[in-house]
Picture 1 (cartoon, helix red, strand yellow):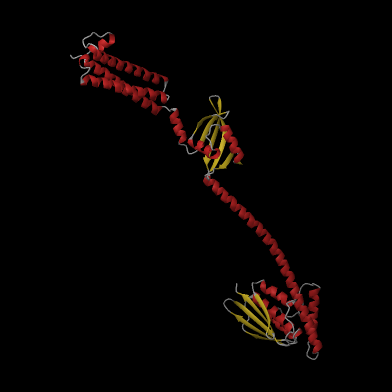
Picture 2 (spheres, helix red, strand yellow):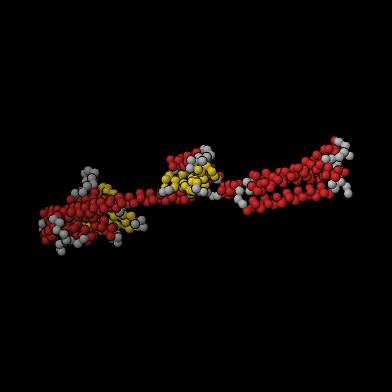
Amino acid sequence: MTSFSQIVFEPGGVALSVFALLTLFGQIYAVISAFSQKRSIILRLTMVIQFVLGLCWFCLLLDGSFTVDYFDRRRAYLGLTRLIFDAPWIAVAVIDLLFAAILCISFMILRRYGRSHLSKGAIKETVDMLPVGICFAKEDGTVVLKNLLADSICRELTGGALTDADRFWKYIEETGEKQNQVSIVVLPSGKAVMLQRCNIEVDSERFIQLIACDISEQYRMTAELRDKNQKLLDIQQRMKAFGEMSQRLAMTEEILRARVSIHDEMGHLLLSGKYCLDRPETADRDNLLRLERYTHLLLMNEGEEPDDALPSGIDGAFAAAREMGVKVDLSGNLPQSRTERDILSRAILECAANTAKHGGGDRLSVELTDDRDGFTIVLSGNGTPPDAPITEAGGLSMLRRTVETVAGTMNVRCDPNVTVELRIPKK
Protein backbone atom coordinates (compact mmCIF):
# COMPACT_ATOMS: atom_id res chain seq x y z
CA MET A 1 0.00 0.00 0.00
CA THR A 2 1.26 3.47 -0.81
CA SER A 3 2.86 5.27 2.12
CA PHE A 4 2.25 8.94 2.98
CA SER A 5 5.86 9.86 2.09
CA GLN A 6 5.26 8.80 -1.49
CA ILE A 7 2.30 11.19 -1.97
CA VAL A 8 3.35 14.03 0.30
CA PHE A 9 3.80 16.38 -2.67
CA GLU A 10 1.01 14.89 -4.67
CA PRO A 11 -2.47 16.45 -4.66
CA GLY A 12 -3.70 13.87 -2.17
CA GLY A 13 -0.85 14.55 0.28
CA VAL A 14 -1.29 18.32 -0.02
CA ALA A 15 -5.04 17.94 0.62
CA LEU A 16 -4.36 15.99 3.82
CA SER A 17 -1.96 18.70 5.05
CA VAL A 18 -4.40 21.53 4.22
CA PHE A 19 -7.23 19.67 5.97
CA ALA A 20 -5.03 19.32 9.08
CA LEU A 21 -4.35 23.10 8.93
CA LEU A 22 -8.06 23.94 8.71
CA THR A 23 -8.75 21.63 11.63
CA LEU A 24 -6.06 23.47 13.60
CA PHE A 25 -7.79 26.81 12.90
CA GLY A 26 -11.05 25.34 14.15
CA GLN A 27 -9.36 24.19 17.36
CA ILE A 28 -7.92 27.67 17.91
CA TYR A 29 -11.44 29.15 17.56
CA ALA A 30 -12.81 26.57 20.03
CA VAL A 31 -10.16 27.53 22.61
CA ILE A 32 -10.91 31.25 22.18
CA SER A 33 -14.66 30.63 22.52
CA ALA A 34 -14.23 28.56 25.67
CA PHE A 35 -12.16 31.26 27.37
CA SER A 36 -14.12 34.31 26.15
CA GLN A 37 -17.45 32.79 27.21
CA LYS A 38 -16.06 31.88 30.64
CA ARG A 39 -16.83 28.20 30.30
CA SER A 40 -16.00 25.66 33.01
CA ILE A 41 -12.38 24.82 33.79
CA ILE A 42 -12.74 21.22 32.59
CA LEU A 43 -14.19 22.34 29.26
CA ARG A 44 -11.49 24.95 28.77
CA LEU A 45 -8.76 22.41 29.63
CA THR A 46 -10.25 19.94 27.14
CA MET A 47 -10.19 22.57 24.38
CA VAL A 48 -6.53 23.37 25.17
CA ILE A 49 -5.48 19.70 25.07
CA GLN A 50 -7.27 19.23 21.78
CA PHE A 51 -5.53 22.28 20.35
CA VAL A 52 -2.08 21.09 21.54
CA LEU A 53 -2.57 17.66 20.00
CA GLY A 54 -3.80 19.19 16.74
CA LEU A 55 -0.84 21.58 16.68
CA CYS A 56 1.62 18.69 17.24
CA TRP A 57 0.03 16.66 14.48
CA PHE A 58 0.21 19.55 12.02
CA CYS A 59 3.84 20.27 13.02
CA LEU A 60 4.78 16.62 12.37
CA LEU A 61 3.22 16.79 8.91
CA LEU A 62 4.93 20.14 8.25
CA ASP A 63 8.31 18.86 9.51
CA GLY A 64 8.12 15.75 7.35
CA SER A 65 7.24 17.71 4.26
CA PHE A 66 10.08 20.18 4.86
CA THR A 67 12.60 17.35 5.30
CA VAL A 68 11.52 15.54 2.16
CA ASP A 69 11.57 18.80 0.19
CA TYR A 70 15.03 19.97 1.08
CA PHE A 71 16.85 16.71 1.70
CA ASP A 72 17.12 13.31 0.17
CA ARG A 73 13.76 11.71 -0.34
CA ARG A 74 15.32 8.32 0.45
CA ARG A 75 17.02 9.29 3.71
CA ALA A 76 15.90 7.53 6.87
CA TYR A 77 13.55 9.53 9.14
CA LEU A 78 13.95 9.33 12.89
CA GLY A 79 11.36 8.76 15.54
CA LEU A 80 7.68 9.63 15.18
CA THR A 81 8.23 11.46 11.91
CA ARG A 82 9.63 8.30 10.29
CA LEU A 83 6.70 6.29 11.63
CA ILE A 84 4.14 8.70 10.17
CA PHE A 85 5.78 8.94 6.76
CA ASP A 86 6.20 5.19 6.51
CA ALA A 87 2.54 4.65 7.46
CA PRO A 88 -0.05 4.23 4.70
CA TRP A 89 -1.65 7.46 3.58
CA ILE A 90 -4.99 5.97 4.64
CA ALA A 91 -3.82 6.01 8.27
CA VAL A 92 -2.89 9.73 7.98
CA ALA A 93 -6.31 10.48 6.49
CA VAL A 94 -8.00 8.59 9.35
CA ILE A 95 -6.07 10.65 11.93
CA ASP A 96 -7.09 13.89 10.14
CA LEU A 97 -10.72 12.81 10.19
CA LEU A 98 -10.43 11.84 13.86
CA PHE A 99 -9.21 15.33 14.80
CA ALA A 100 -12.03 16.85 12.71
CA ALA A 101 -14.62 14.66 14.43
CA ILE A 102 -13.26 15.64 17.87
CA LEU A 103 -13.48 19.30 16.81
CA CYS A 104 -17.14 18.89 15.75
CA ILE A 105 -17.93 17.20 19.06
CA SER A 106 -16.22 20.13 20.89
CA PHE A 107 -18.37 22.67 19.05
CA MET A 108 -21.48 20.69 19.93
CA ILE A 109 -20.44 20.60 23.60
CA LEU A 110 -19.78 24.36 23.60
CA ARG A 111 -23.14 25.05 22.03
CA ARG A 112 -25.01 22.78 24.43
CA TYR A 113 -23.16 24.26 27.38
CA GLY A 114 -24.08 27.75 26.21
CA ARG A 115 -27.77 26.82 26.09
CA SER A 116 -27.79 25.24 29.54
CA HIS A 117 -25.53 27.72 31.35
CA LEU A 118 -25.69 31.51 31.61
CA SER A 119 -22.53 33.37 30.87
CA LYS A 120 -21.67 36.86 32.03
CA GLY A 121 -22.23 38.10 28.52
CA ALA A 122 -25.70 36.55 28.43
CA ILE A 123 -26.54 38.12 31.78
CA LYS A 124 -25.33 41.54 30.60
CA GLU A 125 -27.30 41.24 27.37
CA THR A 126 -30.45 40.26 29.29
CA VAL A 127 -30.05 43.15 31.72
CA ASP A 128 -29.60 45.58 28.82
CA MET A 129 -32.93 44.45 27.36
CA LEU A 130 -34.87 45.31 30.55
CA PRO A 131 -37.39 48.16 30.17
CA VAL A 132 -36.12 49.73 33.41
CA GLY A 133 -32.74 51.10 34.32
CA ILE A 134 -30.86 48.98 36.84
CA CYS A 135 -27.47 49.31 38.51
CA PHE A 136 -25.67 47.24 41.15
CA ALA A 137 -22.70 48.69 43.00
CA LYS A 138 -20.55 48.01 46.02
CA GLU A 139 -21.02 49.96 49.21
CA ASP A 140 -18.32 52.42 48.17
CA GLY A 141 -20.25 53.20 44.96
CA THR A 142 -18.16 51.13 42.53
CA VAL A 143 -20.47 49.89 39.80
CA VAL A 144 -20.56 46.12 39.38
CA LEU A 145 -23.37 45.79 36.84
CA LYS A 146 -25.46 48.34 34.94
CA ASN A 147 -27.62 48.26 31.87
CA LEU A 148 -27.72 50.65 28.93
CA LEU A 149 -30.83 52.51 30.14
CA ALA A 150 -29.32 53.34 33.54
CA ASP A 151 -26.13 54.54 31.88
CA SER A 152 -28.04 56.69 29.36
CA ILE A 153 -30.05 58.32 32.18
CA CYS A 154 -26.83 59.15 34.02
CA ARG A 155 -25.26 60.57 30.85
CA GLU A 156 -28.32 62.72 30.14
CA LEU A 157 -28.38 64.12 33.68
CA THR A 158 -24.69 64.48 34.53
CA GLY A 159 -23.00 64.34 31.14
CA GLY A 160 -20.86 61.34 32.13
CA ALA A 161 -21.02 57.56 32.37
CA LEU A 162 -22.39 55.81 35.44
CA THR A 163 -19.24 54.78 37.30
CA ASP A 164 -20.03 55.87 40.87
CA ALA A 165 -23.51 54.90 42.05
CA ASP A 166 -23.19 56.75 45.37
CA ARG A 167 -22.27 60.05 43.71
CA PHE A 168 -25.03 59.62 41.14
CA TRP A 169 -27.63 59.09 43.88
CA LYS A 170 -26.47 62.21 45.73
CA TYR A 171 -27.00 64.16 42.51
CA ILE A 172 -30.52 62.71 42.22
CA GLU A 173 -31.34 63.72 45.81
CA GLU A 174 -30.14 67.28 45.17
CA THR A 175 -31.97 67.86 41.89
CA GLY A 176 -34.93 65.47 42.07
CA GLU A 177 -38.37 65.71 43.63
CA LYS A 178 -38.58 63.62 46.80
CA GLN A 179 -41.76 61.55 47.16
CA ASN A 180 -41.92 58.98 49.95
CA GLN A 181 -39.00 56.58 49.37
CA VAL A 182 -38.35 57.51 45.73
CA SER A 183 -37.06 60.50 43.80
CA ILE A 184 -38.46 61.84 40.53
CA VAL A 185 -36.36 63.74 38.01
CA VAL A 186 -37.26 65.23 34.65
CA LEU A 187 -34.63 64.61 31.97
CA PRO A 188 -33.64 67.32 29.47
CA SER A 189 -35.47 65.29 26.82
CA GLY A 190 -38.72 65.80 28.74
CA LYS A 191 -39.06 62.28 30.13
CA ALA A 192 -39.89 61.82 33.81
CA VAL A 193 -37.95 59.08 35.63
CA MET A 194 -38.59 57.62 39.07
CA LEU A 195 -35.48 56.30 40.86
CA GLN A 196 -35.30 54.14 43.96
CA ARG A 197 -32.34 52.99 46.03
CA CYS A 198 -32.13 49.96 48.30
CA ASN A 199 -29.46 47.78 49.87
CA ILE A 200 -29.25 44.05 49.10
CA GLU A 201 -27.03 41.27 50.37
CA VAL A 202 -25.56 38.52 48.17
CA ASP A 203 -23.30 35.82 49.61
CA SER A 204 -22.72 37.85 52.79
CA GLU A 205 -21.67 40.88 50.71
CA ARG A 206 -23.75 44.05 50.66
CA PHE A 207 -24.54 45.90 47.43
CA ILE A 208 -26.38 49.06 46.41
CA GLN A 209 -29.25 48.60 43.98
CA LEU A 210 -30.58 51.50 41.90
CA ILE A 211 -33.75 51.13 39.82
CA ALA A 212 -35.02 53.74 37.34
CA CYS A 213 -38.50 53.60 35.75
CA ASP A 214 -39.98 55.78 33.01
CA ILE A 215 -43.15 57.42 34.42
CA SER A 216 -43.58 60.17 31.82
CA GLU A 217 -47.26 59.44 31.21
CA GLN A 218 -48.13 59.17 34.92
CA TYR A 219 -46.14 62.33 35.67
CA ARG A 220 -47.98 64.24 32.93
CA MET A 221 -51.37 63.08 34.21
CA THR A 222 -50.39 64.00 37.77
CA ALA A 223 -49.31 67.47 36.64
CA GLU A 224 -52.60 67.95 34.77
CA LEU A 225 -54.54 66.80 37.83
CA ARG A 226 -52.56 69.21 40.02
CA ASP A 227 -53.36 72.09 37.67
CA LYS A 228 -57.04 71.16 37.60
CA ASN A 229 -57.14 70.97 41.40
CA GLN A 230 -55.57 74.42 41.58
CA LYS A 231 -58.17 75.75 39.14
CA LEU A 232 -60.94 74.15 41.19
CA LEU A 233 -59.51 75.74 44.32
CA ASP A 234 -59.49 79.14 42.60
CA ILE A 235 -63.08 78.62 41.45
CA GLN A 236 -64.06 77.60 44.98
CA GLN A 237 -62.51 80.75 46.40
CA ARG A 238 -64.26 82.88 43.77
CA MET A 239 -67.56 81.14 44.51
CA LYS A 240 -67.09 81.84 48.19
CA ALA A 241 -66.37 85.48 47.46
CA PHE A 242 -69.35 85.54 45.11
CA GLY A 243 -71.57 84.11 47.83
CA GLU A 244 -70.45 86.75 50.27
CA MET A 245 -70.99 89.41 47.62
CA SER A 246 -74.44 88.01 46.86
CA GLN A 247 -75.37 88.32 50.52
CA ARG A 248 -74.19 91.92 50.58
CA LEU A 249 -76.06 92.63 47.35
CA ALA A 250 -79.22 91.06 48.77
CA MET A 251 -78.93 93.20 51.88
CA THR A 252 -78.28 96.29 49.76
CA GLU A 253 -81.27 95.45 47.57
CA GLU A 254 -83.50 95.06 50.60
CA ILE A 255 -82.32 98.40 51.97
CA LEU A 256 -82.86 100.02 48.56
CA ARG A 257 -86.33 98.50 48.32
CA ALA A 258 -87.18 99.88 51.77
CA ARG A 259 -85.87 103.31 50.84
CA VAL A 260 -87.81 103.32 47.57
CA SER A 261 -90.97 102.27 49.40
CA ILE A 262 -90.54 104.98 52.02
CA HIS A 263 -89.73 107.52 49.31
CA ASP A 264 -92.81 106.60 47.28
CA GLU A 265 -95.15 106.56 50.24
CA MET A 266 -93.82 109.80 51.68
CA GLY A 267 -94.01 111.47 48.28
CA HIS A 268 -97.51 110.11 47.83
CA LEU A 269 -98.53 111.45 51.24
CA LEU A 270 -97.00 114.88 50.68
CA LEU A 271 -98.45 115.30 47.22
CA SER A 272 -101.85 114.07 48.36
CA GLY A 273 -101.74 116.52 51.27
CA LYS A 274 -100.77 119.36 48.96
CA TYR A 275 -103.59 118.37 46.62
CA CYS A 276 -106.08 118.47 49.54
CA LEU A 277 -104.82 121.87 50.64
CA ASP A 278 -105.02 123.27 47.12
CA ARG A 279 -108.45 121.75 46.36
CA PRO A 280 -110.19 121.14 49.67
CA GLU A 281 -113.59 120.83 48.01
CA THR A 282 -112.53 117.74 45.99
CA ALA A 283 -110.15 116.09 48.46
CA ASP A 284 -110.89 112.75 50.11
CA ARG A 285 -109.88 113.38 53.72
CA ASP A 286 -110.53 109.80 54.82
CA ASN A 287 -108.13 108.47 52.20
CA LEU A 288 -105.56 111.05 53.25
CA LEU A 289 -105.82 109.98 56.88
CA ARG A 290 -105.45 106.35 55.81
CA LEU A 291 -102.27 107.17 53.88
CA GLU A 292 -100.91 109.12 56.82
CA ARG A 293 -101.53 106.22 59.21
CA TYR A 294 -99.93 103.76 56.76
CA THR A 295 -96.85 105.95 56.35
CA HIS A 296 -96.57 106.34 60.12
CA LEU A 297 -96.60 102.56 60.56
CA LEU A 298 -94.02 102.19 57.81
CA LEU A 299 -91.68 104.73 59.39
CA MET A 300 -92.12 103.16 62.82
CA ASN A 301 -91.45 99.69 61.34
CA GLU A 302 -94.59 98.27 62.90
CA GLY A 303 -94.66 95.23 60.59
CA GLU A 304 -97.71 94.42 58.48
CA GLU A 305 -99.65 96.91 56.42
CA PRO A 306 -103.03 98.10 57.75
CA ASP A 307 -106.08 96.48 56.30
CA ASP A 308 -107.28 99.73 54.72
CA ALA A 309 -103.98 100.43 52.88
CA LEU A 310 -104.06 101.11 49.16
CA PRO A 311 -103.79 98.09 46.87
CA SER A 312 -100.29 97.21 45.71
CA GLY A 313 -98.94 96.79 42.19
CA ILE A 314 -100.32 98.56 39.13
CA ASP A 315 -103.75 99.12 40.70
CA GLY A 316 -102.08 100.76 43.69
CA ALA A 317 -100.02 102.98 41.36
CA PHE A 318 -103.17 104.14 39.55
CA ALA A 319 -104.90 104.81 42.88
CA ALA A 320 -101.90 106.72 44.22
CA ALA A 321 -101.74 108.83 41.05
CA ARG A 322 -105.40 109.72 41.44
CA GLU A 323 -104.78 110.73 45.03
CA MET A 324 -102.09 113.10 43.77
CA GLY A 325 -104.49 114.58 41.25
CA VAL A 326 -102.90 112.98 38.22
CA LYS A 327 -104.89 111.00 35.67
CA VAL A 328 -103.08 108.14 33.97
CA ASP A 329 -103.81 107.49 30.28
CA LEU A 330 -102.66 103.94 29.51
CA SER A 331 -102.24 102.56 26.00
CA GLY A 332 -101.06 99.05 25.19
CA ASN A 333 -101.31 95.71 26.93
CA LEU A 334 -100.18 95.28 30.50
CA PRO A 335 -97.16 93.01 30.92
CA GLN A 336 -97.50 89.51 32.35
CA SER A 337 -94.09 89.28 33.92
CA ARG A 338 -93.95 90.16 37.60
CA THR A 339 -90.69 92.04 37.13
CA GLU A 340 -92.10 94.15 34.33
CA ARG A 341 -95.28 94.87 36.33
CA ASP A 342 -93.28 95.96 39.38
CA ILE A 343 -91.14 98.31 37.29
CA LEU A 344 -94.23 99.70 35.54
CA SER A 345 -96.02 100.44 38.84
CA ARG A 346 -92.91 102.10 40.28
CA ALA A 347 -92.42 104.19 37.12
CA ILE A 348 -96.08 105.35 37.19
CA LEU A 349 -95.73 106.38 40.84
CA GLU A 350 -92.50 108.29 40.26
CA CYS A 351 -93.58 110.02 37.04
CA ALA A 352 -97.00 110.93 38.45
CA ALA A 353 -95.33 112.45 41.51
CA ASN A 354 -92.87 114.42 39.35
CA THR A 355 -95.71 115.60 37.04
CA ALA A 356 -97.69 116.94 39.98
CA LYS A 357 -94.78 118.26 41.99
CA HIS A 358 -92.41 119.81 39.45
CA GLY A 359 -94.56 120.47 36.40
CA GLY A 360 -97.90 121.21 38.02
CA GLY A 361 -99.54 118.81 35.57
CA ASP A 362 -102.55 116.58 35.99
CA ARG A 363 -102.16 113.98 33.21
CA LEU A 364 -99.65 111.17 32.64
CA SER A 365 -99.49 109.31 29.35
CA VAL A 366 -98.20 105.71 29.52
CA GLU A 367 -97.46 103.80 26.29
CA LEU A 368 -96.65 100.08 26.51
CA THR A 369 -95.00 98.14 23.68
CA ASP A 370 -94.21 94.43 23.84
CA ASP A 371 -92.01 92.88 21.13
CA ARG A 372 -89.86 89.81 20.71
CA ASP A 373 -86.75 91.37 22.23
CA GLY A 374 -88.21 93.19 25.20
CA PHE A 375 -90.82 95.41 26.84
CA THR A 376 -90.85 99.20 26.37
CA ILE A 377 -92.52 101.75 28.68
CA VAL A 378 -92.79 105.41 27.66
CA LEU A 379 -94.17 107.84 30.28
CA SER A 380 -94.85 111.50 29.47
CA GLY A 381 -96.53 114.05 31.73
CA ASN A 382 -98.06 117.45 30.92
CA GLY A 383 -97.42 120.62 32.80
CA THR A 384 -94.73 123.27 32.66
CA PRO A 385 -91.46 122.11 31.03
CA PRO A 386 -88.36 122.41 33.23
CA ASP A 387 -86.16 125.49 32.83
CA ALA A 388 -82.90 123.66 33.52
CA PRO A 389 -81.55 120.26 32.47
CA ILE A 390 -83.11 117.40 34.39
CA THR A 391 -80.95 116.03 37.20
CA GLU A 392 -81.68 112.48 38.25
CA ALA A 393 -81.94 112.31 42.00
CA GLY A 394 -84.08 110.61 44.56
CA GLY A 395 -86.87 108.68 42.87
CA LEU A 396 -85.55 108.79 39.29
CA SER A 397 -82.14 107.60 40.46
CA MET A 398 -83.72 104.72 42.36
CA LEU A 399 -85.89 103.88 39.35
CA ARG A 400 -82.81 103.72 37.10
CA ARG A 401 -81.03 101.40 39.51
CA THR A 402 -84.08 99.15 39.63
CA VAL A 403 -84.21 98.97 35.82
CA GLU A 404 -80.48 98.32 35.49
CA THR A 405 -80.63 95.40 37.94
CA VAL A 406 -82.57 93.49 35.25
CA ALA A 407 -80.15 94.60 32.48
CA GLY A 408 -82.60 97.25 31.29
CA THR A 409 -82.03 100.82 30.15
CA MET A 410 -83.61 104.16 31.09
CA ASN A 411 -83.64 107.35 29.05
CA VAL A 412 -84.95 110.75 30.28
CA ARG A 413 -85.57 113.54 27.77
CA CYS A 414 -87.52 116.77 27.47
CA ASP A 415 -89.30 117.29 24.11
CA PRO A 416 -90.83 119.63 25.41
CA ASN A 417 -92.57 117.63 28.14
CA VAL A 418 -90.57 115.37 30.36
CA THR A 419 -90.54 111.86 28.91
CA VAL A 420 -89.12 108.77 30.58
CA GLU A 421 -88.46 105.72 28.38
CA LEU A 422 -87.70 102.33 29.93
CA ARG A 423 -86.51 99.26 28.00
CA ILE A 424 -86.65 95.86 29.74
CA PRO A 425 -85.07 92.97 27.74
CA LYS A 426 -86.55 89.49 27.59
CA LYS A 427 -84.81 86.88 29.67
